[in-house]
Amino acid sequence: MNQQADTILEAMLKRQNDGVFPNGGGFQNGFVDRMGAGAEVFDWDGNPAGYEGHLVYCWSFLHSMLLREPVFRDRVYGTPGS
Image 1 (spheres, helix red, strand yellow):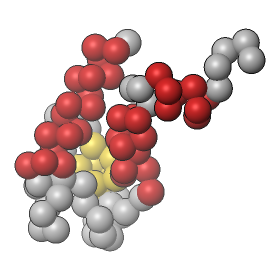
Image 2 (cartoon, helix red, strand yellow):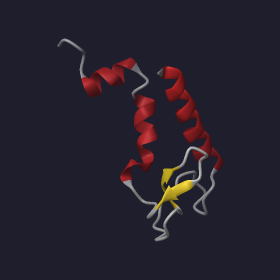
Image 3 (cartoon, helix red, strand yellow):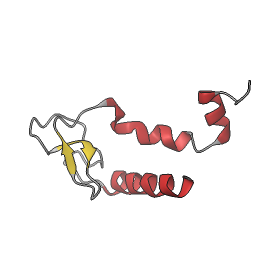
């Protein structure tokens, strides 16, 4: 599913690059305490759909970038059959 993964990753990188929140980033880093306004979860149209807006996995897209490289995938998941 490389094409689908690249589509999602490219959208995430675009959001981060363009910046859409007051902190200048594309991923909110702070609590909002208002349902539907937290940027820890987004709907398919890119709108915030979470609650607090501050979760560790907001930066998981960086992990996905590393896992595109076979050497890093092998290091994280190990080589099949070994």
